[in-house]
Length: 278
Image: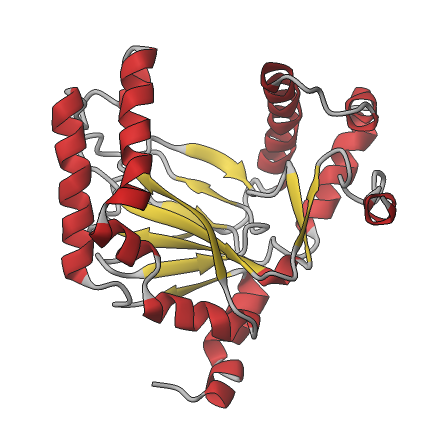
């Protein structure tokens, strides 16, 4: 195991800073992975939800109950709790941040059928951005045909600001949304969020077309650490019978301040100092 000084100077940190991701092999205890997957599969069986019938197509009440039970594992299932808070993973995150890493949330994904390129920080900006990291944790061997998670390396630095500025330059109506107070009711906030998200994703797909993607055909227990600002997505599954089980956790330090999209949306809409003053 590396010493603290060796951690800080390790090449894996340099790779992460430059490319926005790094792969850590054989990090998670396989017995905890298997216990968590078994618990998820039991929930699937109980709700009659199977891989060949994605749960998003089920009735809303079934979808909601299924999702709530998956989330409950985070607090009530000891193997799941231990897996999300794995000490080896936390050790790497502390080395990356040079501060204590604090778990923000986790989410289990059992399959994916393709998702457009995006960053996870469209509606929420973190300052400083280099003190936030996500961990994509493989719960099974990831087959190349299952719809692999990928990143577009290097796009965590300036690409995001360029996308924001081009979105505002070609969609001036978004300025009105950004400059209006956030709606109090959750439904209006969701619809506003979705409208901006759609435009940003369209611009992201356009500007990143042709850029090289790095897909991850990794093994059970491996982890991809990635910057939430790096543009990433999921490739279409060429074999729909395959699953792609993973846990995604987000970590940040206590020094991070979070800003909503109405407070910060690139260089043309920056109200962060006003937020600090209030």
